[in-house]
Image (cartoon, rainbow, N blue to C red; front, side, top):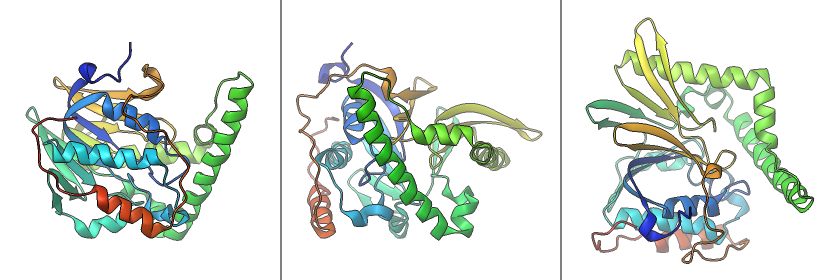
Length: 293
């Protein structure tokens, strides 16, 4: 079944997207655009690291990355409430907490009430010890991670030409290193414990690029822990509809090779000021016509 036609857009009450890392080689912006155009959300939460400002200095900005921005602005200017929650890679936006542009609002954290239950939403880097104690090391690791993704893309291009299945080097490394697995478990448990202490029903994070929905319990109670994953390795998002949460995985759905209204992608290397000028041109408050797209 094709999911890209406007008449077949799925209604979703709330969609949570995080860790897109626009401006990096590993970002799967084209796939994200197809997903965004396949749904009609009532509310959108962008849970951090949408634009990778850390690595923006290399001035890499394909057309598909701008299309993601255009779709976000399209939602916001046509009435869909959009919350942009800041992450560590776009932390410079934290000074603009509370800023509103049409239906788009920048926040550092968010509490929503969904059908009588409380959801606590934040990016998650506040619980990353390496972020707090060795930020320079974390930034170096981020550059190394982006390089690994770039190498992975080259490997997968070769494998595809040979008719073989693609692989994810970063996922294999993370899943095989005990310290990485331990870090993920500790991160999830820390988020859950604080959420339980504060009587939240749901806690939603990003940051660790590990999509998940699970109930975590301790002596004080339990909470549903969720992570929206990312659009670098997992191509995933969280959806809430009809009082139920679900994980969307792009690779588990069929999409057309190309949307009729999706521009051809292209490698763009421009001066950083030129890219920001493009962004500023797109981010304008435009009259709402009352229709979501």
